[in-house]
Image 1 (tube, helix red, strand yellow):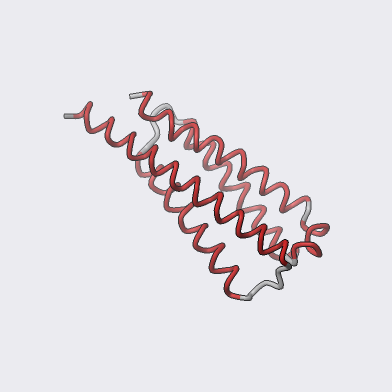
Image 2: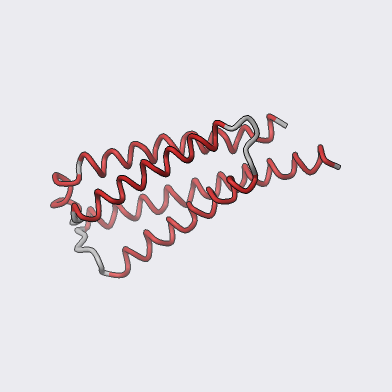
Length: 135
């Protein structure tokens, strides 16, 4: 059973750490990055706080001895929704992003999509393994 959860757990931990780093960058660099990215401080700070909360949740879920399927589904869905939200924010024109800011948010959307895909693969492996041991 442990082997089936290894991919999911590993990706969640990496996702959690990178999310924490991204959150810290958004918080600590809110003012200095505002000009080069065109991302207002009033957006960077809440995003950074949300990223730190998400990172903590990922760390807690990855730390369970047996990762609950419903939690893993929420992680995959949360990353998928985050990817779509970042893309929608990019095309909305709501933020006065510079070219660098567009690249920054676009790269964030790609990274989140990759995590969602890897975590989905880990979730499928986990549920397949649990179905085999239950049957």
